[in-house]
Image (tube, rainbow, N blue to C red; front, side):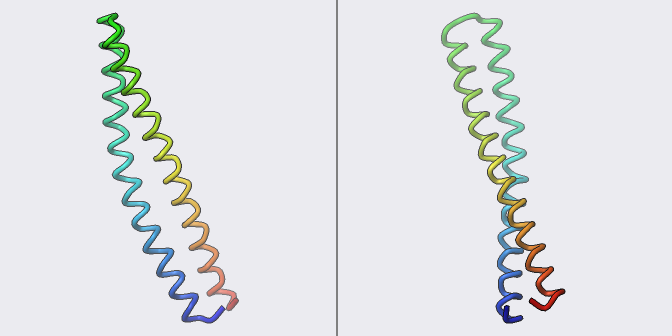
Length: 96
């Protein structure tokens, strides 16, 4: 691969990786808050024993689960970008 093109690809992957890591850090913080909220709603549902409290808990739990899935997907994206960056950097070392 032409060196200039390879360097451009490395810069592109690196920039995407930096953004994805930043997004992952934010999502981790948000997920912690949402999980805490879901846990509080669970306790309220247990204490109140009302349909409304149970519904609020179920909704909070679904939201936390959806956010956890999004976090896992973003984590996989970060891992994929790290792998791609490593492959590109290895190409620089081998001259391919």
